[in-house]
Length: 321
Image 1 (cartoon, one colour):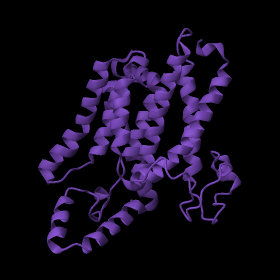
Image 2 (cartoon, rainbow, N blue to C red; image 1 turned 135 degrees about the horizontal axis):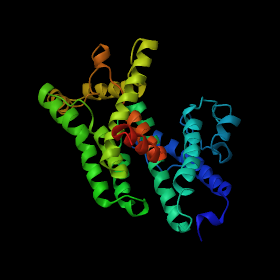
Image 3 (tube, rainbow, N blue to C red; image 1 turned 45 degrees about the horizontal axis):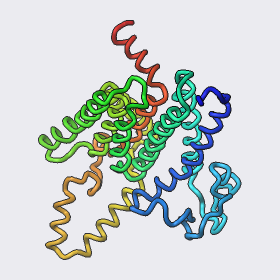
Image 4 (spheres, helix red, strand yellow; image 1 turned 180 degrees about the vertical axis):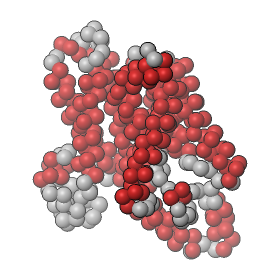
């Protein structure tokens, strides 16, 4: 059986539905992963009072709308991030059906199309989770970046035109593109890292999926888009603030340090010296701390959904073809 033995609207419905459902689980990942909590247990519960969430209230997007953005149990406000992430998951699922499944050769077996869709949906959802975690906590979990890079290598046989050599080379180039200039050289010149290795691992993920050219595009396009957004925010708000969660976590860390004996505290402070988030940010626009991960994610998603168009346009621009 092939994909095209069933109508496109059926597959679009499947893609959107799966995207919405897994988008709902993505909210669990975004909330629990940075806190080191188990992703499976306990079941969904209200972060305000801890009461279990009813099945009907957990219906993606619709549940939030019916509750009018407030928990049924304690009336605590529910962040709009929850329906936004679910909606992004649904849109991603539908878009991947259109770009990754319905564009396959007509004789592609159903199992192969299904595996390809699941792999690319997993990549897209992981990237969305990474973006929201980095926005809130300014760090990128290895389980997403390294896991996504491994998935990129393992799924090479499913992806037309991909090869293990291109995937592995892309991963190495992607990591070095960030690590060499922004970590190693910056550390040698200024005595501290310029960017976290999470960004290097995220570009490595892009390289594993899209080759070294994709890694270069992800880094450069991410930098351009980040610059435009940061300038717009600075011009409209006059400053770039750290996320609230980062300030709260630093305050908790400082409190824990204050409880330690002097010798042990000095040792921990020395270990934290290389952590760019351990101290207060320095004043000035050039010293502002910005989560770069979301912009790398945006570029990687652009490649995932519009890769063919981007490659053709870049080729025409570079070679005049």
